[in-house]
Image 1 (cartoon, rainbow, N blue to C red):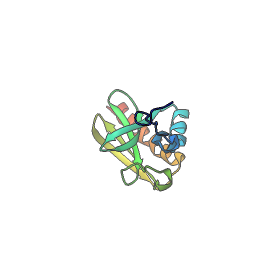
Image 2 (cartoon, rainbow, N blue to C red):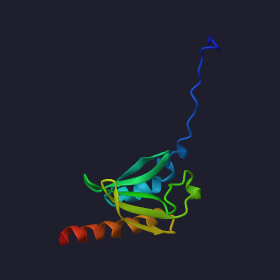
Image 3 (cartoon, rainbow, N blue to C red):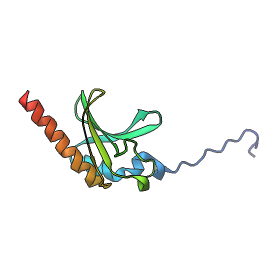
Length: 120
């Protein structure tokens, strides 16, 4: 018999509501193209898709209004920013809300970075 005063029921978590689940298509597409990507907590309860480039560089992808929508249905497009440590080097946006829309920003953003690195 369970004592009702000491029994705590664990709430059920709807995993489909996590950022990883909401943006699984984008994370999978990035992984399929060789990128190391995941969901990062950017502070203040905000999240972004983070793509690790090297020890100093990363790309953060959010909605085009700079906040990743909690619900994918509210997603309005992509903003991808290339960061050197915590400093934004370049940012690009698209109204395309698809995973392919994000990939279309990431590839040229990183290609531009490679050209600059080769010229240095």
